[in-house]
Length: 304
Image 1 (cartoon, rainbow, N blue to C red):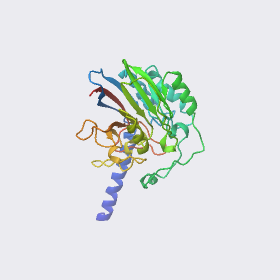
Image 2: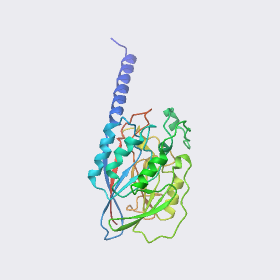
Image 3: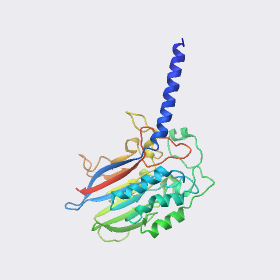
Image 4: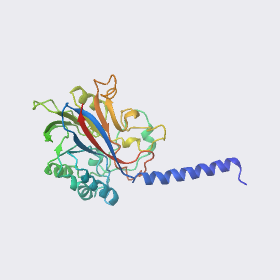
């Protein structure tokens, strides 16, 4: 009969194998989150915003492509893509096929590191190190310029260190975005005169504090971000261990306030709404998620 240490070792091995198997399954268990954000002026009609992020698409991910295409059935008023769309040098045709049913809807986008550069193998333990998480420059580049041109041709607003505006459902939305802060490419766009907006929307790939502070300081009503993967490997009952940026783990995904409590909470009147998407993908070199399903989010913006 095996000794107690051997039984414990066997049980640990079985638990580890079960956890790994489940993490591979969970990484393909896509879910639509739905949240309500009371951010519009009193009396305003609701607006439905589909937030996509971190697809990290490879050409062979037919299930993810079909799932993203099906999101057009939601008939959102606006689509916002917060970057990291590709995970393979040949992913662009598959990505455009996935997004095609949504391209007839008003949209806006920014880029992430995995729109510019193909992923490379990394030691996962590096994400547990304190401080910044510099990206190792990979050798292969991705067709970011072609992706951006296609999205612009479809009418989506390119917010790469720039501002724009659009009218959706009779409401004017002022947009301000930055290039990927994780690559230190962010240059917050200078203020400009524009018609009074019904909603001021900030868009960034990585929710670094400097970007969130700048968007809050200029009066953004809502900021959308991705990048964190929701922690990707989370501890049940505890949550995320890392955010892969300088955002706290308490706001690694979902709807929160910045810099303090949610604007609808006591003492939160001076905060900006912040939504961080856990995203839909992973690096192909770490194709696992645990206690953190891949997601897209439908935000219903309502009157305050």
